[in-house]
Image (cartoon, rainbow, N blue to C red; front, side, top):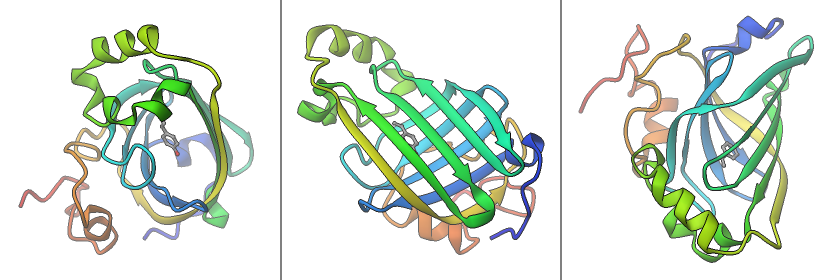
Length: 179
Ligand SMILES: C=Cc1ccc(O)cc1
């Protein structure tokens, strides 16, 4: 894992993280550029879900501390505060009621099923929302560079985060080593 020190917004953009929330949910998230994020979910209520090119608001609050927020086609809202120099973040996820009732609908490569998400958010309940506020500890930081399509490029599989942490997943140019 890189030991880089985060100071500027540019230090954050292009960075790839893996982290585990205190409730046990493991997530992988990539600051693709100053308005776009990709992610994969490895543990928790919607493990198996993965998303590319989600538009997000990304700012630096003060040196080395970053806030990211977005709203999804599912109606789920997310706010993340990264303190990468301390290997931690705080995330709050606001799930519409239907995602808790039918998580399996969202567990897919969302980009190929946007219509299905829009349909479900109209058809099923929004309220009461499920709010999940949690700290997480960062277990991996990688310098992927911005707009790297290899970072989040396939469905999550058992052991993928171990492969990434062990250095078996990306080559020296942060391209995926295909098995
Ligand atoms: C629902 C998406 C989501 C992505 C990353 C994260 O840390 C929390 C939620």
